[in-house]
Image 1 (cartoon, rainbow, N blue to C red):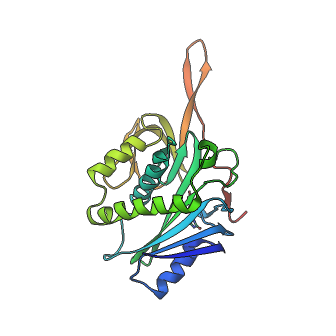
Image 2 (tube, protein in one colour):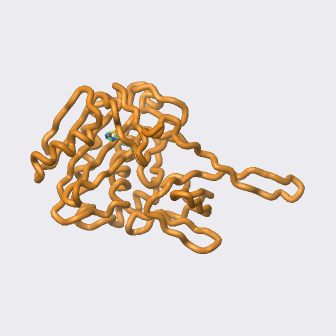
Image 3 (cartoon, rainbow, N blue to C red):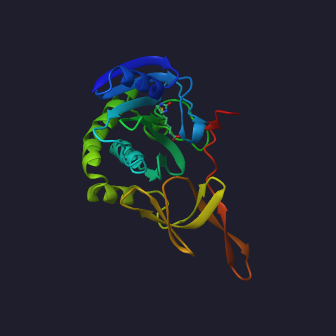
Length: 259
Ligand code: BTN
């Protein structure tokens, strides 16, 4: 893997895409100290000041396409493994976030380049300042690692898991790891997909990386969407009836790029 370290860039994933066009068969790693137009999911802006780990890996594919739903989970598993290894208990929020408690510490954005390569973008808050709803490693570790060490550890783990995943898909080991790491498993959640919201119990992740939701109508499977935990609220003390209220707001730091 050839590594390119930059200062400030628009987005490491943009640079990675451009470098890939010049060298289509090479694995590439692009890092930056800050990004002016970091991209998050669903067109959201990913704020990326100095102090965070912002990097993108280009992975050429020897066959067309990749299991798009499962890939961010595998990367999330690698990133979460590093974070846990540092002593910070964390969970994977399907499909691409790493949470500490209910606060988002890291995000993964996988983008397909013409079916022949994938750009894996990873953002991790290390010592950069964060707002409510967000977490950084520095908040949880008296002596946080350097950004460079965080990137090296994550890339090392990704490099181990990725070839296995590309050859075999989600292995039993990966599925077990995901089941252990999955946030809100067995809890009441909503899944928003466009205009449509489904509610039920978060049952787990299937072989393709889809989220399985147990609902009154039976099991539903999702390839994408926004999961929110539902908090039970007592609405009638005499009958002890319960309703559920959305708990996790949209991550406050992510603003629509089209604002
Ligand atoms: C998300 O949770 O919405 C995904 C965030 C991914 C952010 C990373 S930072 C490095 C890479 N470059 C980008 O522009 N985005 C990803």
